[in-house]
Every structure is written in structure tokens, then in C-alpha cells.
Length: 235
Image (cartoon, rainbow, N blue to C red; front, side, top):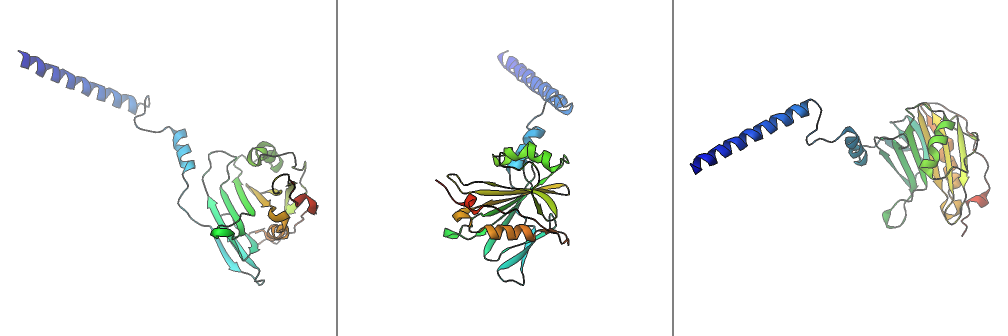
């Protein structure tokens, strides 16, 4: 009798497990619950935090002036010149928020221990919301740079033929920073210059800005005159 009861209990338990399995499957297929799946937002967060496989979109070649190389970026179709003794790296990612850049380049001389100093940085955002340059700056610039009080009220420079905002965050207990922001087609482009060693590479930075061209265009540029004292490190 005891053996029969045991067998009955096993059969009933198995039947209950089968019913639970069927019930879970039905709820899952109807979208009421999700089994071992990340939500779309979680999947987006994961994909944004994992860098995609490294793929470079830049090529370099010598120019007639041996001091400079010409860089071509095939992803955003632009060229510029930078010092041939500097290193340059590029990165791409898929952003999940408008404030996150999609493409970045770092320029700088090789420092100690084989580590490159990042003196000039270039960032590109896809302007999917089609904001005007001023609206984009008002909405995102302070969030990205942590500072907006030095940004001009209106464009004050021209880079690659585009009206640009050019401004300095003075050196106060840190190196001065120069920002140049403009819009080209559906993208927002920003250059950053770290005035290490009291801005001794400032002319190189302006050279990079003035040689930037999109496609085969030959455009004029205007870079405001700055006060060299603004680049001097102050304790």
C-alpha cells in the first residue's frame, strides 16, 4: 500500500510539473512574461558598454611638407593634416543617448613609456534630432564638457566653411582647454585642445582646424585671435 502511495505521489508531482511548464510556455509566447531574456533597454545598455570589434576608418599619407601627414577618414569623408611625428587613433561606438559621440580621433606626440599624449581630440555626434547648432549646444554642451559659461552666444569662427563656436576655458589650477564646435550636414563636430606646457602646440591645433575639409571642398577658415596669457597655467 505504501509503495502504491509513493508511485501515485510521483505521478501527481510529474503531472503538476508538466502543467507548470505548459503554463509558463503559454505566458511566454503571449509576451506576458520573459524567460531568461533581457529587456530591450537592458540589451541596449549592454551593447553600448561593450566596445565593438576594432575597425579603423582612417588612413594616413605623407604630404609635400615632411612635417605633416594627411589623414583621410572614410567614415565621415573628411581630410586634415597633423604632425607626422604624432600618433593618431580612432574609435567608433553605437550610442544609446544623443549626448554620446559616435566617432572619435585622438592626436598627440608620443610621451614617456610609449604612451601618447592626447593634445587634440575630435568627436562626432549623429544629430538624429536635426537640432540647430545653437540648440544642440544649449541642450548638450554643458552635459558633455561640464562647462558652458565660456561658450559664445553666437558663432565666432569658421571651420571647414561652417560657422563655429570657438572658445577657451582658461587655465585655473589646470591646463587651459580650447573647444571648437560646428555642424556639418547631419553631424555635430567638436575639437578639443589641451594647452599642455602653456599652449606650446596651439599653432599646431589651428593648423589641424584650417586643413580640415569634407569631400573635395576647398573652404575658407577664420580662427579668432586669442590672448596667449589665457593658455598660461595658473596655480
